[in-house]
Image (tube, rainbow, N blue to C red):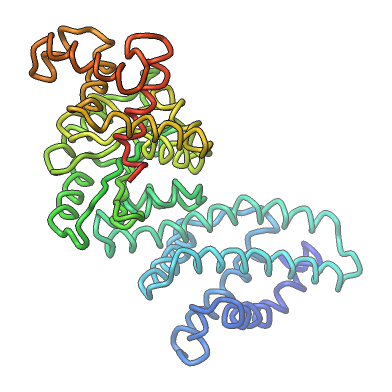
Length: 401
């Protein structure tokens, strides 16, 4: 077949062993995790044998555009399993695939140059073969890698890796979804639950979080040391319909309310699969601006529409300082911030507000008059709503601690 097809394939066949050795040496030199091939003769022999085999199989199949067989793909997958079994990281695995592909293309170019340009038809044949069959080979290799990861990694770690990969917009997220047995959605609501004043090393809470992961089977990651003594739970909730928030978010919040014994702030932002890093940034900002409330009081996560004023204020220090001074005027009380919070959450309706506060409507009226006396702002006026609602939210968010 090589004689019939011409010199390019014969040239590749002649240098298969030498090119394979160069590939192994490149792994040792460029990929730290494979530096052990210099001292592990068995692993080096296995890697070299595979490299020689793939080059020879390429020369056998490419002339007639033959496809890699199931046995071929099985062998390739076994190499992925072997690498995963040795503890190779996903990052190093990606480097291996990049180095292998780059060297194969380099070898084709060298063989073409050796034949002074070679036969254009042969070059087109091998390039036409290499792209689709290389993709099938990489898929098999990754599948082998995934098989071992699924077997070795606890489910919670699989889900955490997937969530962090999606949020980093890492192209290996699709593969990690296979590991965790999840289908990727085209759109997600990135929901950040901020948990302040978190005790260090709260193993009971972390165990409850693990239960949530297993129950809801969505990409979740728990970061107990977000900063400032706060932790955060990040959930990627697939959006199934054009609704303000998917029911799954409410279900997650309801379940989380049962395990958290402290006030939290919840923010959510929608984003496409390709833009989850930006969605996380927005959701974190929204969560940071949202008021801290007992988990049992959560009705829904806050969105940008709920806290857009506070988000803007947070970036303008002199405005934020002014609002903080207004908040200090309310300190003589009694319970004026709590009263205003309930007043605005009930759309300034006196009856429902008094009922929520467990006070008589006349007591509510007294407190609202007291706000006017202390701030010179009528809580029910347009100007009062604009200023005092921002004061309440900024204060309850914990931003002025």
